[in-house]
Each structure stands twice: as structure tokens, then as C-alpha cells.
Length: 162
Length: 251
Image 1 (cartoon, rainbow over the protein chains, first blue to last red):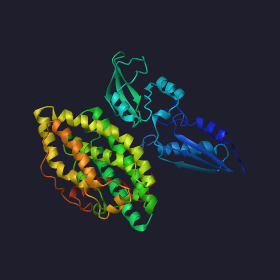
Image 2: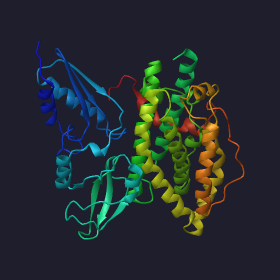
Image 3: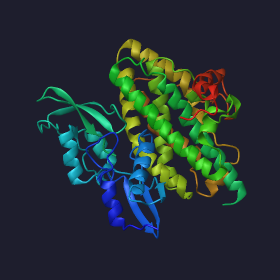
Image 4: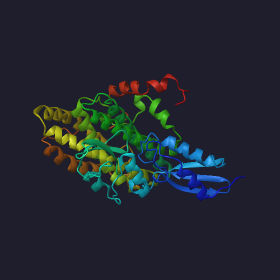
């Protein structure tokens, strides 16, 4: 019987990247909610970002694989919807990584999503300009919106605040 | 939960799921056909969101019945679906699609706001999540209705024609299922009569401000969610075709 500590599992999960944004981990994104170890059994709780996200099954499989690679065979991955995932849970380090990746990080809204969703403020991830205009509140994946930077004169994407 | 409550709750979840599944399919028909690329993307996103929401309701339904969501989506006949006729109508022109989505979004957001405080926790908790995603839908469709209603003579005419056709159909959203009052008494779902009033208070002034005339005919085409138009049969023919080619196929 092999046992590990929750800390070891959290560390292992740090290496599991978001399948659609491979520069950030599912831990940094706030997708992994809880890790529980009971003897040789491990239970990981995760929550989907957008409920129609097609990457959800991939995420579930990759989390399971990462735990199994620690030598654990008794693994359960539980998906919960509550509390609803929020972009406020994305860590500051991950926000920086998103920016480097070319994706403007979502504004923090502290639960007041409506005001943020209608503010339409995004900082260009390339030049830092705030002189930007929303072009489409939908994008190439469910979690992205399309903006235009008037200084770079080019389009960019923002992670959609949720 | 006693058996009577569970039985009607099961039907309610199926109705919620079927509305979203069929609407998602109708919207997905625009992929590759929308007037501009950005709208192609937007509608694909909205369809995918609604599909995700349908899946949540089917999974809540499954928790009570053991019915497999794929089985429900791909192997039922039209008469077994419980969606309103509003969502099965062919996609029509752009004004028709946007207006249908707007009328539905306005209903859904109000419904979710109340459902998230309901006493059946799995449903209430799921609604809190779905609601946040819906905010973006209503924002998108309402900006389109404003643009179309206040745009050119042609865009206004087409939007008005869509409203004249869709208005009675939209009223079916507010017809409770037989026995739904048990769920209202248990504070699991809101009273649809009151929801209807809130919806009218919201959409009437908005549509009027968009230079559209509210039709007087407010009688839904049917009060029974088992009644469907032939359009649903055609839609299912497309939607279920691949799944039915080989039941044992692994995806």
C-alpha cells in the first residue's frame, strides 16, 4: 500500500497544465479545489471553468494520470459546480503568465460580475495600453473575448471575467 | 424527498434540459453561415454554452432517474421531447435567431436568479454557475435587437416580423407543467406566473425602445410540452443521425 501526503499531490498537480492555455496549471487556475488522502485512497475535487468547456474530460483524465503516476491506484476525481468557478480564483502569478502568453488577464470583480462584464476594460497584453475596444464578447474558446488595441493597431484576446 | 415531488422535479429538469439542447442545436446551424465571422464565433459560443447547460440539467436528471444523458439526447423520438415549440422553429433569418435568443435569454436569466435560491440544493447550486455565463448571452442578444430594431427600414421590418411570429411561442415558456405547483409550494422552483410578469416588465419597454411593436396575441400555440411541430422531427433527423448510425460506437 502506497501513501502520499496531500502536499505531494498538490505538487504533482502543479505540473498539469490547462489544455487550452498550456502556460498555467489547473491548480493556479483554481480548477483543482480539494485534495483528500484517506489511507491509500485519494480524492481530488475539481470544478469546471465554463460549463460547456470541451476540455473538461481532458482535464479530469490528466489530473487522474498525474495522481496515478505517484503510484496511487485508488483515485477518485469528483466534479463539483459549487461554489461556481470564478476568474477571481486565478492566482496573481498565473495572471502574469497569461499576459506573457498574450492573453489579457480578467479583471477582478469580487462577486460583482455584472458591472465588470459591462465595463469592457482590458489592458493590451503587448503594450499595456488601456486604449482598447471590445470587438466580441465571444472568442475562439468559451473563456476568451476579442479586443482591439488602438496603439498596437492589432487585435488581442482577454480571458473572459466570470 | 417524497415520490410525488421527485417525479415532477424529474420532469421539470428534463424540460429545462430539452429547451437548451434544442436551442443549442438551432444556433449551431449558423456555424459557417452567420453574416460576419465574429457572429459565427459568437453564436458557436452561445450554442456551446447552452449545450453545457443542457448537460448540467441532464446530469441532475440522471442523479434522480439513472437515465443516460446521451441516450436522452440521441435516442428519443420527437414526441418524447419536452422542449417548448419556441426553440424548435427553424432558424429563420438573422433577426429571427437573435430575437428568439433574446426572448429566451431574458426568461432564463430571470429564472436562474430565482432558481439559485431554491430549496433543492443540487439545482440551486448549478444555477449559480449557469447564471454567470448567461449574463454574456443577454448582453449580446440585447445589443443586436437594439441595432436591428433601430437600424434600417429592412432590419426593423424583419425584426418586427420575427417578433410577430415568436411572441405567442415565447409565452409557452411560462406555462407550468401539470403538477408543478408542488415544486412551487416546496420552494424548489419559482412561480411561473410571477416570472412571466417580471419578464414582461423587462422585455416590453426594451422592445418598444428598439422601435418594435408588441403583438397583442399572447396565446401560446400549445400548453403541452409533449406537442411539437414537424420541425422538431426534421431537427432530430439531423442531430441524431450520426449517433444512430452505430449505437455501440465509442467517441
